Each structure stands twice: as C-alpha cells, then as structure tokens.
Amino acid sequence: MGLLRPLGLLLLVLWPQIYADEGILHAVDENNSVSKDYCITYNSNWTTMPLTYKNETSYKLENRSSVDLCIKTDILTTGVKDKAVVVIIGKCSILDKAKIAQENGAKMLLVTNKDRLPRMAENKSGYENLTIPIAFVGYEDIMGMSQVFSSSINVTLYAPQSSLLDYSMLIIFLISVFTVALGGYWSGLSELEDLRPSSGFSEIRTQKQKDDNVTLTPLTVVLFFVVCCAMLLLLYYFYEWLVYVIIAVFCLASAMSLFNCLSALIYNIPYGQCRISCFSKSAEVRLLILAAFCIAVSVTWAVFRNEDRWIWILQDILGIAFCLNFIKTLKMPNFKACVILLGLLLVYDVFFVFITPFFTKNGESIMVEVAAGPSGNTEKNGENWLEVPGASIVTHEKLPVVIRVPRMEFSANKLCGGSTSILGFGDIIVPGLLVAYCRRFDVRTTSSSVYYISCTIAYAVGMVITFVVLIVMKRGQPALLYLVPCTLITSSAIALIRKEMKKFWNGGGYEIMEHVDNAVSEENATCGDQESQ
Image 1 (cartoon, rainbow, N blue to C red):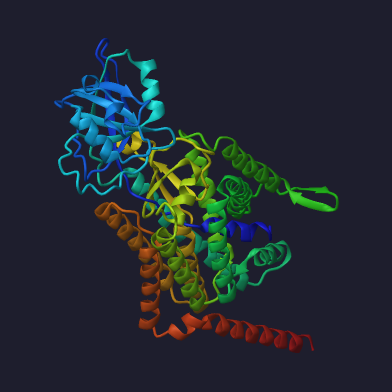
Image 2 (tube, rainbow, N blue to C red; image 1 turned 90 degrees about the vertical axis):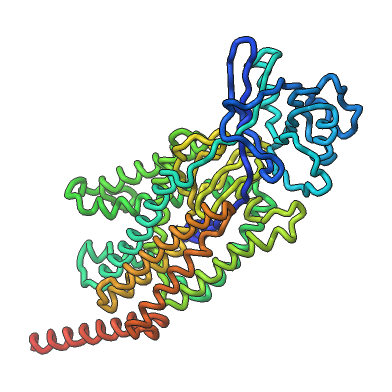
C-alpha cells in the first residue's frame, strides 16, 4: 500500500496533444455500386473540403503507390490524366509531388504512408498555382481496396462538419464535477470521523483511516513535482517498456481504490459480518467478497483493455474510484501547500506542452509524444481528447490515465478512430485536492460549507471555460491553465471576504480546533477524576 501510493501519484500526468484536419475518402466500385469510406488527413489551408460527397465530382483511382513521384519520369502523362493518383510519401516535398501530378493532368493527389498519417505543415508559398486536392490516406487502406472493390474505383473527398457540442462532452463534464464534489465531501466526512470520539471496532476503523491518509507538505509537493518531470522524461525515452509498468500500477491502485470506495458503503450493510480467521489474521466475509469483486473488475479491464466497444465503462468506473480515493486520502495541510501544488503542476503542464517543442527534433512537445506513444500522433483539445489516426509501429498500448466516453456523432474524427472524448485524471485530482482542503477547513471552522461549495462551483466554471476555448480555438489547451486560476482565485476571494485568509493560508483553523479539542479532553478528564473522588 505504501509503495503503490507514490507510484499511483505518477499517473496524474496530463497529456495535451495537437490539432489535425481530418476528412473522408469516399470510394465507389463502378461495376457493382459498392461504396466504402476511409480516413484521410489534410491541410485545410491547402485544400477546402465539401461537407458531403453528393453532387461532387469523383475521379478514377490510379494506384501508383510503388513510386514517390519526386521526379516527372515517375509517371506517364496518359496514366494519371483526370484521375486521383496515389503515391508513396518518399523523401521529397508533398507540394513538389502535387506540382508534378497537376502538371501531368491529375485531379487529386493521395499520399500514402506505411507508418501513420502525418500532418501536412509545409509552407505553401511558391506553390500558389496548386489547385488539386491533397490528402494523406493509409497504406493499408489503399492495399485493402483491392479486396473490397474491382479494378475500377472512383473516389471523392469530403469532410462532414462536426457539431460544436457532443453528448460525450456533457457526460465528461458531469463525471468530473461529480467526482471532485464527492471526493471533497468524502474527505470532509473523514475529517468528522477523526474529530468524533470512538471506541471498539469503530476506533479501529478510524485509526486505520488515519494511517491510510497522507499529508502533502510543501516539501513533498516539490519532490512530487520533480518526480513527475523525471517520470515524464523516462516515458518519453522508454515508453514501450514503461507503459506496461503504468498499466500494472493502475490495475493494483484502481482495485484498491474501488475496494476503499465500496467498503465505505459495505460497512452500513448489516450482513456478512461474520469473520474468517487464517494465520492469526481475521477478516469479515463481506469484505473478502468485495475484495474478490474488485480484483475481478481490475483483471477484466487488464485483459480486455484494448476492446473499444465496451471496456471504457470499466475504465471509467476504475478511474472514478481511483480519483475519489486519492482526493479523500491525500490531505493538503494548508492553502499554501495547495497553491504550491497547483502552481507547479500548471507550470509543468504549460512547459511540457508549449516550450518543449523548441527542443525536440521533430518539433512536437514531449507530452504529445508520450501521449501518442510509439503508434503515432494523438490529439487533445483541453480536457477533450480526440485520437488522430495512426497505424501501429511498436505497441498499441495507451496510458490508462483517463476517463473515456465515446463520441455520439458521425464525423471524420469518428471514422479515423478518434471517437472518444477523454479527460485526464490529473484534471480531476489536482483541483480536487483543493476542493477537499476547502471542505475540511469548513468542517474545522464550522463555516457552513461555503469554501467547499464555492470551490466546487469554480471548478465547474473552469471546465466550462476549457470547453469554450476548445470549441473556439480548435487547438489543444492544458486544462489546468483554466482550472487552477478559477479554483485558487475563488478560494482566495472567499477567505478575504470572510477575513480568514491567515487561518486559511496557514491552516490556522486546524491548530485552533486542536487546542479546543485538547482543552475539552483535559476538562473532561478533570471532571471524571473529581467525580471518582
């Protein structure tokens, strides 16, 4: 348990990603009218895509994927005239390929790549006369067309417009706010348990809860920040091995978190309280059954983790339990520690997203590369992750540090495999620790939950702002960039208005209540001695 907790903390890393234009290649067999859609990527600054393939001109597909079209002699004019030509990516510029294809009468250029669908980010200056559509299409898709269609294939390109909002985004919002609010409230209940006198078995439970709780001091917060940076760099260089370590840690930590969450409910059920003894240890039957259930859920996820259709449900259940358990057990001693934690992780998030591209060879941020793994690029817009198409190079494994909800609309993104909206655990846990501190401060100072409610609302507002920026900018944004200011500013404003900033900053409410508790205990003890005399 003690080892899993610091390892579990490393799962809080946030994975922002990049934005790419996606579209659809609509292929039709002239002989039997069979049609099929394939994913493409393109540069919207180069090519304007229609919203539908209907009423659009289609062109016969000419598969020349054995050549890279870097010199004019790679193709014959009669072979590509008025056709959509497919070539391999090669070493020369994509715009040079398009220029040669257009000069030879081609109406469309499709560039295929055996590894993944890359981004087209070249400068088009000097190629203003290029008018033919240019797009990337998967090599496996081109090769697979021969099995689906006959030799005569007509193709056209289009990009259906995605709606600004999707129900999956609403579900992600509800899950995040619910988890933060419940985690903070549960932390407050734990604080009440610590304050309430107990005896017998209840005392044992309370002592166990105290032993499980961990207080993050400013020093441990700084150390945690350093470990996060080191772990991210290790993942950047050794992803194909460390990803399995993270998966194993997630399985253990999430099973234990689910057990802790459900056991809080099980204790209120008056059944299965008989105990089984073994090797001088005893445990309740209901807790043994619950432990077996939690292990079964975790193992099931591990076995079927790459199943796209339904495994997201188990991952979300385990993820919610994971976040709830951490918010409840990790205690911030004062607002100062909260500011240090949230501030450092905000700097961490922004640095590894926006600054590291200036140092990497391919111009991508380290977070993008870690999030994508060896299999290619991925895309995250704030808290909403959209996976960019990519064929596997080394491993299909992804880091299990997200809440997943399938998108519910048909679009190019869904066809390309990016049909899931995703929220990182860190976007829940990091602000959730501040919400939990506010709740415990309310309990200690009897301030009628004003800090807790205000901070929870501020978190919800921060999530809304993140979604709005996502929709307007259409670019990846670190969610903490909006969540941290919203929660910290709101909490500070409440403390200033109530003239409690000094206690709130230093955790003075805890010290005052501890003195009161000690005084009450001493008074009770004195009264008891007098009565006995």
